[in-house]
Length: 230
View 1 (cartoon, rainbow, N blue to C red):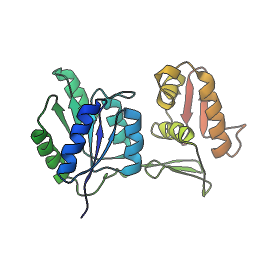
View 2 (cartoon, rainbow, N blue to C red):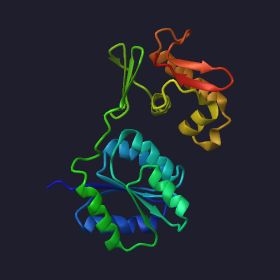
View 3 (cartoon, one colour):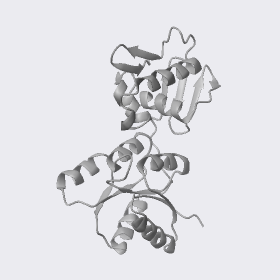
View 4 (cartoon, rainbow, N blue to C red):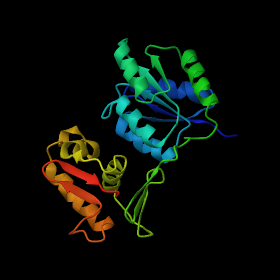
């Protein structure tokens, strides 16, 4: 019998274990992580049927995690919010969450809300269809995490792939150095421009026909980079 998989994302180990035990007892398969970056990685790998996501999860906020998941997936997301601030609740829902449950909550209430969301989704991690980006002779499959260059699969490191797919989700849009650094390495690296230049060079060596004269990963001097799809 198929067990529906739930990803629990919360920085509180006590609550996380409580949720895991309760959901296991009701025949759910549960994966749990304590921060937003790990949540994205596990979500992409394991394709859960539903995500329980703390609004204030460490490393990446719940809202940012939700937005990134929505780039590639329609998986139901229930936000857990330890706040009565209506604006934050609205922001959580606007980011793509299907529901928002305020802490403290009862386990019975949460399970009822989970059942409501799962009833509408019969397949794991129902994905959007616009998950492939083409730029010249490069094709990027955001869901399968695969990059094809002139018909051949290219191996990218996780950092290289993350950088390329972030640009692919914003094609032909100049992304600032700071935004790319925060996305790829975290806010503490926002001023480490050498990191970005190094990995842009790595990427160009792997995907450009002539890395010395790039046609795909373009530089906007003094501003940032963009993926050229024209």
